[in-house]
Length: 355
Length: 246
Image 1 (cartoon, one colour):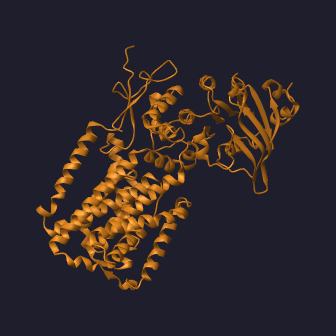
Image 2: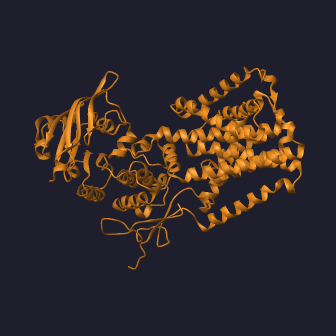
Image 3: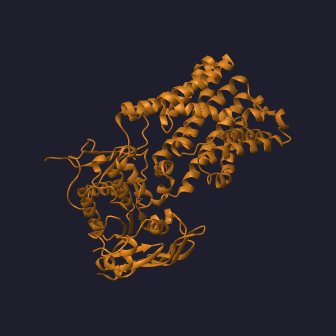
């Protein structure tokens, strides 16, 4: 039997390379947004970027890490609050948005120390309690004055067009950074370790995965992403009222986007954010029926497409635009019984492609 | 036999494990060399699986010490013990269902084995080939049947480059042909210098590998030595087989 026994571990496909190229071109086009679009369109796109950040970060936590949280609004609210505080202390407003998210990530470290000891439903509800506590503590701040709230008045220093454009660019840059960092993280050995923990924590520990430190990485990252989204939301809304930012509806939106797009798929969370954005744009003014529609959509997906839209496409067509896993080939073909290397103590050394 | 293989790879002293008032392991003393394959038999509830769980760090002992390759590992968590070379397979396989077969073994090689990426690729491929699973490398683990899940448990354990491999009833549910195939694989592991502790109820396949046999009952070791002698020990016959065998 003539057989090319060159084992390769492939991480990219021609399709995924094309997808990355197209994504890069779209980002370049989007970067020119303020020069091409109206302020209204810029604001809407800024909102979409924030939704994408929220969706991919919640998906990282729940879809890849198995840590289903209903309290991510804690970090969303803290991000906005920290930005208000930093701006009030005299820090330039746009750097303050990013620094606020870094501070919240630091705060999430001690929170992770006790929250990550909880499992399943206890973790989910525990995070909600954390969010409620953060809300109450922020209300005590004299600057915020309870539910009266305050404003990011430092933004008034910018002329309206400039403000819209700057907020847009910071949101676009933040979303791009979040996506790039998360993609790299999930493709690294941390990514495979966190998925192993999701599937079976005890078995993961038994093969050498440092469970707590790995979970902490994804927890802190998700906190950072939610905080950055919260700070950016503040930059679009300008006003800060605690109940608006610490409301559980934010996590409900995250869950909706990820469930509809595809839990545990990188592309799915982005798709879910786009779907949510479109639904909101078209039906958001319909009052209570909008919420009924959202609930019904989530229900339909849970019943008939439990893996979400992208999850279904991925399984049905073996589609991966942004692949995170490892695909083994021998001589360019998937392995089979005929294409399994035989004999000798060692298989031919495999080689990886770009990572 | 070289000098290193004369040294005990693992030594257990006065090991006790209680779950509230229930004593599951009762003052276990045990030692084995790096070149040994030790079989463990005993009735259900004897404490065999708990013994393995305490050895790998899944359960903390109530008292006693565990020394591995000269280091006291009694209080090390499971992940750190795995990184030092102690690994187990589970009686009921625990695959990482959402990952492929290759990724299951890769994660073991990259973490427990401490291999760099290219080495981990190589290690994972080799482990899969050795366990006859290479052709399933791209299959999602949740789609595997029982036999392949058991093979995956073994391949994943091998991915960590173990020094001491603890097998928990890995032969259960296999046909004679499959069991013989498994024995061949485990024999190959012995040739590679991996110390083996194997809990198994299918004694005839266990005896093809074990050069030393232990019988446990009620949390204690009641016999330890040459397999043939142990199987004829009256206490073993009474505890394990429920009476004398004519």
